[in-house]
Length: 345
Ligand code: TYM
Image (cartoon, rainbow, N blue to C red; front, top):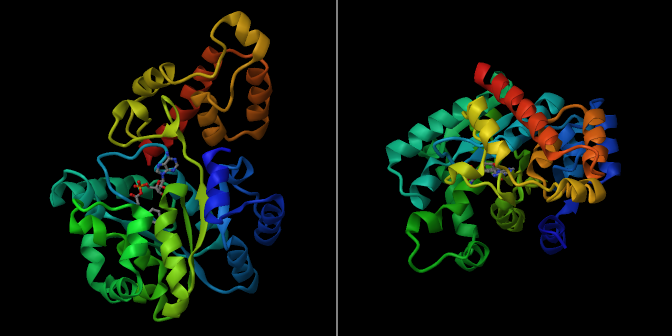
């Protein structure tokens, strides 16, 4: 069983099935995003309740976030691209939390560095096309005053035993790291943003990859006794690292494509990326490529817009009629086109 199915089975998330997608398209009158059509976003909690709210014309908001580092890779940008799409479809507020404190506690960085990274990352996030009238981006270090009341409420309701067993903290961990999890939960409570929602209790929808679920599983367990709404979630798979099917690391330069990589660097990285093609021409033509393992093909699934072209590549590369060199050239072209629009913005 792969880790994505395991996530559904072990942690009780639900798959995004065709019925849900059909309802989404019918209600919104918009075609499902390619991330949904291609099961990049593939699991959810309470997404049906978000659609119920939309159907009734009742409010909800979107919340997501970023732990700032010196540069964002193409995996980090996925939930923001998707959040901007959802904002456009639903016409709702988006809240973006920059956890500069988290990075201060968990990396060897000064506070000035985490703040600089946060400012730089915010500029990249803004390129995703959020509605400036309905988007609130904040750094924890600056917004802590307004958040403090709800932070305390969450801290009082969370048991250390549950946080420890979820995150596996160790005796030697610093207190900042141990006390951080409630910070990522606070934006799930709409009253954390009185300038947007007053004291109303509004549900939020969180797009993220599956690695962020532990925070939200914990808060979903305590919202009832706090008299609050459970956050809904929509989860993506990971964009694989250049070396193969594991998560990209923002600290290993060679493992990822960064938003500020030049075309030459992208080309060099893709040329060296893990390939699922046969090890000889003969073998490739006989058995075809292993599409699951092929990093360039997986990047095309995420960034190539045309479904028809993707389908053609899937059939031809999967059956050995297309070669790795061609797939890599296409991937370089598609990624560079995406990065070029970001560079211009
Ligand atoms: P961070 O900065 O590690 O990651 C930012 C967002 O990117 C997602 N992500 C990926 N998605 C696809 N493929 C990948 N290879 C990949 N790597 C990372 C993450 O799931 C995340 O959604 N603690 C958080 C910051 C945060 C947050 C939030 C995230 C604060 N509040 C609310 C999501 C929702 C962090 O360090 O994310």
